[in-house]
Amino acid sequence: MSGKLYGVGLGPGDPSLMTVRAVEVIAEADVIAYHSARHGRSIARSIAAKHLRADHIEEALVYPVTTETTDHPGGYQGAMEEFYAEASARLASHLDAGRTVAVLAEGDPLFYGSYMHMHKRLADRYDTEVVPGVTSVSAAAARLGTPLAEGEEVLTILPGTLPEEELTARLAATDAAVVMKLGRTFPKVRRALERSGRLARARYVERATMSEERVAELADVEEESVPYFSVAVLPSQVDAERPVREGGEVVVVGTGPAGPLWLTPETRGALAAADDLVGYTTYLDRVPERAGQARHGSDNRVEAERAEFALRLARKGRRVAVVSGGDPGVFAMATAVLEVACRPEYLDVPVRVLPGVTAANAAAARAGAPLGHDYAALSLSDRLKPWEVIAERLRAAASADLVLALYNPGSRSRTWQVGEARELLLAYREPETPVVVARDVGGPGERVRIVRLGELDPAEVDMRTILLVGSSQTRVVRRGDGEEIVWTPRRYPGA
Image (cartoon, rainbow, N blue to C red; front, side):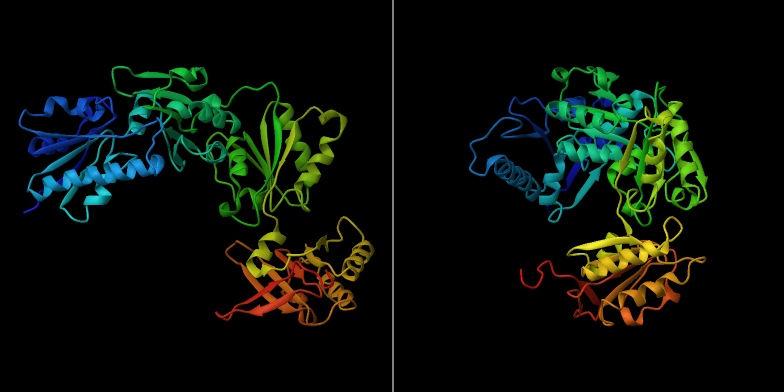
């Protein structure tokens, strides 16, 4: 009969953190396998050394390459694939002979561990058991003596080998994080922490639970001293003291048309880093609550007052996120904030605007590609401009044969504008012109329909609806699944 394969997690380095099951498996095994670099020193073997017997068959699985270059015709990946194939074949020969094989792994066998490459090649052919181990993540948090993640916080674990832009985005967007595999990646990881605004709270743990252990503020660590077996930690933000600042800032963020799926990583980071959230209550409700963060909700019709309130908070040293739906620069809060910020008393307050997915783009994506060529975006609301101006602009855009994105088409107090706009457009467009009627895109009440301009019913339009009116070139096609899509060709006739 074939032998049994074990993947044995040894924990982060201190032999006393090995589990009872790990010790039992090592004692029962015929063959002990472990990985090492070409220098032959195996950290896994050193952790388990006192449990090894003289009659154990040892299989040292020596990597052909680690960080150095290779002349293998398949490059680094080719050299490693060949090594994994050869190593798994060596273990298979023991298993075929009926021997029990224990593959030692630092930390946990299936958490960034070398054992997993043996597991993927052998577990479907042999009886296999994986013995979990304490990870370096847990060990680092224990050594720091601070919660890693609490309540509803999201913990993100990242390899330092990711591109710097990707690291920056993910660090900005999460609550807590651990970055593994430092060593040569440390300068890049440090820059990503700084660019994401998280460097001040980042901690550094080197060789957790081992004799050479080191714990420090990450900002104070010299890059030349960082080994591979170290991690960067962003611990829990619950109960964390907010930094004392000489001056604050206002960041105007767009949350997109609906919930968290529409947030960008940059926006997530700004929302997480804010001391205060200011906005229309409906939009604030889309943002998860965080400990220590103040929320200031208000009615949708007090934009100037909301903007001034945010700027006053920033002058007191607070980091303020003004929350806007969609894109803050498209019929939304960015203009209101900047208008107030241009007053003399607020000229010294830093203001940033972060983009979001605007309603026109969200609705267009749901319907196909109606905005594939030139288009104009207009608001039908006459609260801030006369209807005569709106009508004039509608005529100009319609006569130019532009696709139209019509924001704020109707509400409980504005019921006639859609009908007026329809009649005006019919003077320039055929009744069969497609119109996308998109309501609550991304939300629980989402409904996207394609109707004809001559059949557009104002009664089905409310304040959560946007209208996309096609040009003379816009097409509607019924696909094989029965669904209609609408698109506007990029090439115009005569081009």
